[in-house]
Image (cartoon, rainbow, N blue to C red; front, side):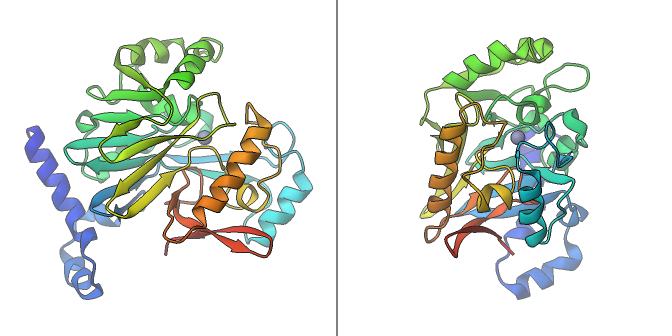
Amino acid sequence: MNLHARLAAAALILAPIAACSPEAEKAAAPAAPAAVQNPDIHAFRIGALEAVALRDGEIVLANKAGDSPWADTAGARAVLTAAGQAGDPITLSVQPLLVRDGDRVVLIDTGAGGRMGTQNKLVASLRAAGVDPAQVTDVLISHAHGDHVGGLVGADGSLTFPRAVVRISEPEWEYMKAGAARAGEAALLTAVTPRVQPFAPGAQVTPAIKAVALEGHTPGHTGYEIASGTDRLLYIGDALHSSVISVQRPDWINAWDTDSAAGVATRQSLLERGAAPGARIYGVHFPFPGVGRFQRRDDGFVWVPEG
Ligand SMILES: [Zn+2]
């Protein structure tokens, strides 16, 4: 099947999800392709753009020093259980985001590629959304940690998205190059280097997607604002990890942040921004599919997923 036929087929798979009236959804349901019911994908719209949350897997952390990034393990347990989640272990979902921006097929982050005990589902999820890895035109990286760049290569070391340009902020690319050998990822770095096109922080990276510097987690950590008409969705990367702890206790130091104070400031400003009228947030580590908004409660915030 050539590229255009594949894109047409993918558009057909996504089409029933675009039906906006309950009647239309009901009428379309019996004929909907099996992929629509796949629990590892969630299609939604950002204005006129099609987006799909793609499950890669889960990171499961023991709630103890050295595993969890939050030092107050008793406090973390209390906050999680009050929100109806398990206090130990702490589970973080991993879901890269697919966005169709005109003729561009954009993937934001690449999952862990099976690292960190994750399930390595990204490519299967992508195919379930009707997209072959060779159709991806742009991979946008939030930051250089293994659960975001690990999926750039397969088990054999070859590029997972062979035709895609890989976009990453200039300071993050420097950080990635410096850290890859230390992290035993020299082969990944060698494979991906010819495809990398770094950008200045804040750059417009595709017609609809703008990079947003979200400081603190890593030296060039980047969110992405996806805009269509008056609709906006902000991909927040690892500025917030937990939909409970990071949202309700943004002032807690996260040991995974390279600049703790900047990480706290970024979390607090994102909570304000994500509670503004009409704001939509995409949490790559929030419970699948990770789409929702922040809401003020008492003197803080809570996460409100889209239903
Ligand atoms: Zn992460």
